[in-house]
Length: 326
Ligand code: BTN
Image (cartoon, rainbow, N blue to C red):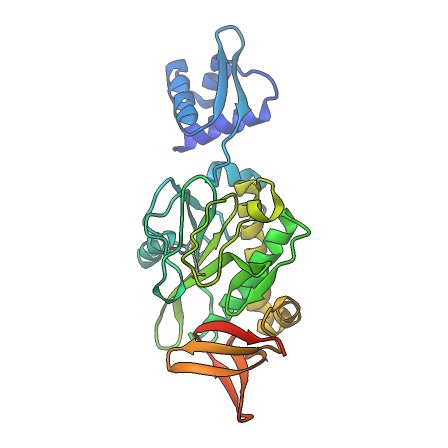
C-alpha cells in the first residue's frame, strides 16, 4: 500500500462522519477516480469503508492487522518502528530482516508479517505462524557494543516483551524461562529468536525476532513445552496493532536503557519473573546434557548453574528442563 493510500486512510480516520471524494481529491491533488481506486485497495485490505454518492466516504471498521498503517497512529518511538514493513505472507520475518540489514537497512526498521510459511524457532525448530491471529515481528538493531556483550540483548528483549504484554493485557501471571520464553500457566506464550552478524570487534546487525501467540486457539501440541495464547488465557481477543505498538515502545525503552546502563538494571525484574531461579534443571547444551541448580544470570545474559559437585558453570545456550522445585 502506498503513501497516498495511507494518507487517505489517515483522513478518513480523522473524520468522524463522511468525507467527500472531492474533499479528498482536493487535499491530495489527485482525481476522484484515483481516490476511488485507493479506497478500493483499502477495502481489499479489510477496511470497511462506506461510500454514498451524496455524502462521500466513511470509515466504519479497521481490520485487526498489525500493519504500519494500524500501528503507526498508536506508536510513540524515536527509532524502533520509524519504518514498518508489513507483509501479508513471508517465509520468516527474521530472514527478510537479515536480507535488508545486509543491504544496509537502518537500525529500527521493523518487519511484520500476518503469516509466516517457514517461521523459525530457536535450536532449528519451526515456529507455528498461522495468518490472522498472532504477532510475528523482527526488529533490525545495530547496537554499538562488542560481539561479547550483544547476547545480553536476549534478556533485554524478553523483559521488554513481558512489559508490553502486561501493559496491554494486565493481570496475567507471566514468567520468563531462560533464555527468552514467556510462560504463563506452565505453557509458552511467546518466544524470541536472535540472528546476528558480527565482525571481530563490532556488531554489524542483530535481528530480534519476536513471536507472540495472540488470538490463536488451535495449538501446535507437538512441542515439548505446550503452547498457549492470550485468547486462551483470557477468553478475550487482543488487538494486534495495539500489542505490536506496546512491544516496539517497550523494546525501544529497554534497548536505550541497556545501551546507557548495561544489563544490571534488568536483573531485579528478570529475577522476579524467572521461573528457573533456585530450581534444579537439566540443560541440553551444545556440549551435552548438564544438571544443576539455577543461581541466576551471568553478566553476559547466560545462566549460572551450580553443578552437583558444587562447581559453578555459565551456560550460554541450550534448552532448559525443570526437574525439581526443591
Ligand atoms: C523460540 O522460542 O523458539 C523463538 C521463536 C521466535 C519466533 C519469531 S516469529 C518472528 C520471527 N521470525 C521467525 O521466523 N522467528 C521469529
